[in-house]
Length: 281
Image (cartoon, rainbow, N blue to C red):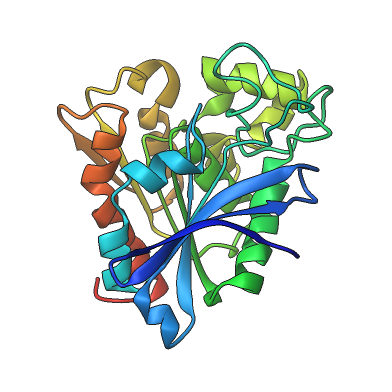
């Protein structure tokens, strides 16, 4: 699978790159970033993939996430994909929470979205691309994300048991079938059958018996979307009722921004390194 290098820059003894490829899943070109730590010069390294939130591209976390120093210390490859297919020929919507920049990590089945908006399949495809082109230990992979991407990390891992060995999230949309962001997107991409929506809802999947490895979730108590869109209390209740391990950390004063994410990014990378057996926990 051909890969175009957009840019590379040295960072903390490793390399931060941005790349582009033609995706079979989306039928479009897709751009993503990869940080390769210095340890990869000697051996394959575990991979942690970060899924971004609404309106974001790969660039937001790459530029603001402050992950490279810790990733270099721990020997983690960090992959940051885009949040949707893009292009003048790709369906879009004027609203920020639907269409380009708002793929919700599902495979759309409804027009006009279905030809391109196949983000669940794309994340699986990207894993193959990383294994082909980078010094990745494909047997040790973790998944995390923020907001819409936190939803993606939880649900993709729940829907593909064993595929990712470590999971965490910043301010995830925990029960998308029950909140405005998720209901709008699911109705557009998946149709009006709410039973289908529940197959892409972390709370519903846990209630139905799906399980994750140990789970870390951070939320900011000053997050303006906390009650209306994120609903971490529903996740905590589902985990408590089913015995799903959960470390839920609640931080006074923190909001939904990258100031919040970057503050706790190192904690998440250390969590993944411990679960994946890399570096110093």
